[in-house]
Figure 1 (cartoon, one colour):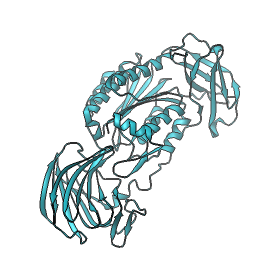
Figure 2 (figure 1 turned 120 degrees about the vertical axis):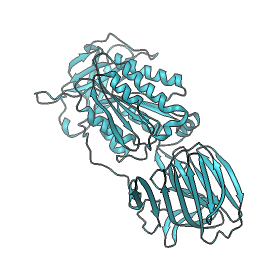
Figure 3 (figure 1 turned 135 degrees about the vertical axis):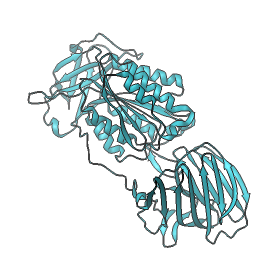
Length: 485
């Protein structure tokens, strides 16, 4: 992925007092028609409605205070592109440096797993050191990182809290789905600022897509740009989509400035049933035509919701063995619940796994970097083969037809043929093909015979899948993928 996204969540927590109801706190930003901050307002200038019922403002502040700041950094392997991880680290450190003296911090690093790399501390240098030591990892689990970050915020000692998430990843590994994550965001009384740093071609593709996008490997996921806009909108914040390092720096400056210029309003709700449902909020400013930004509602968050698993998210695990620190993945396609798509043009059959028409499929894991993959296939009327190192930026394809073998690199907007070799074979009968990759070098085999090699560094790791090009169909059997060090 050619993008960095930063999500900054401002949480002004709810304190449970010894009264009949709990205090509700709202962060509010006021700007004029030119987008400039409007400062100097007092409590009497504001009005709050909770489900249409006017509320009395019990607490008001326009001062900057120390905050609890949590950093969540995506260190998936795709962050290696164009030194994105290093730029993301610097962006995280910039946010930390901009906080008020006396703030406290924690730091999560996440790829397809979420790890607490630095627990609560007031030592800026300790957290910045942990960020600097973060190395590249595997996939991306953005939703899980958000949920765990919000859960940890419940331990915060300061009355204002912020969580920063930096990622270039469209979520493909989380146990929690977007719907569940959004419910927690909406109910958590926090503002969430989002920055999506996409490559120009990716940004154009995402802008023109709807709520879902189809990856090069054929899998449909939540549109990451849409997700970032939705999170910001539902939490009463803003989303940013910079197109350069300079714009990324400006976006971080705007967010830190926003934290310093907000008003904090609190009230005891007159409306009934706060603990049982979502409440809609409306904040306005009396006198003057100002733009007011505040979260649209609040509820009672469940920071440890029941895990929602995608139907195919870990189905592949039944086909995985781990021996001596290596992954072995084998599927004969006899079990229709092993995680592959099952639809009209890509389905399990009594013969094996069948593709028809132009088709690319990949199971949701595992991810391989250095590996050996082989499969038996019979092709009619097209070119069939293996997809490897498939991720959300693209994949490599190794395909055979009766007269030709090709190796290609497929990206979101273009396909590049890397090599081709002649072949004379009856591909309507089962043929065994194999690819072996170590680092940038990949070798291709047909019926145990070396066909050729390529050297390409675009995709360093990813999933293995199946490919069918042209009109026709193909039947696949006995997929075996072995990791080697």
